[in-house]
Length: 211
Image (cartoon, rainbow, N blue to C red; front, side, top):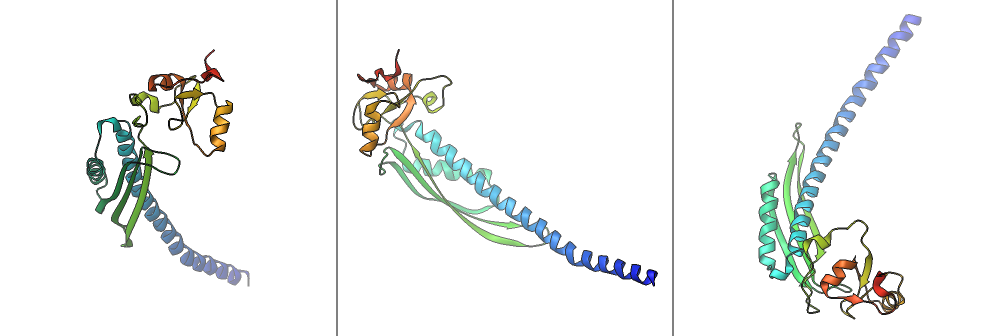
């Protein structure tokens, strides 16, 4: 009687393993399939963002939307071999948004096919939009910021500027900052030395953080 029960248990384990193993294998394949798709989409996003950022740093050179579009397409096609088609569908260069200006906007569309070892595959269409700001200084007579100004400086005093409404820079706690924000005017934060280089002068109320 005991031997019979033991044999029944062995058969039960075998049936469970037979039913569970295919499900587990399919789950692993699906996960690998998803990881590959996400990896391709992230690579496209990184390349697009990098090209937009580099162009944002040199907007004073009047880089055209067509040139930016060509750069992005060239780099993406070179790095992502599995793409069957990639296009920059739309580029808006130095346009004005609701609260910001000198914006650079790019919309891309990619098509690719992902397959795996068991023949499961699919056609993927990925659309992405990237928006950045090119600091051109077009609203005041001053030179554009240098590339180094786009990176955080350790220990640098941070100030606020409102290029559309004045040429002063303020500490974040300044009453002028709160007044402008209440009016819906969005300011830009930057290092104090960058504000000086840009042509701004210290606020007469708060001193711009200068001791």
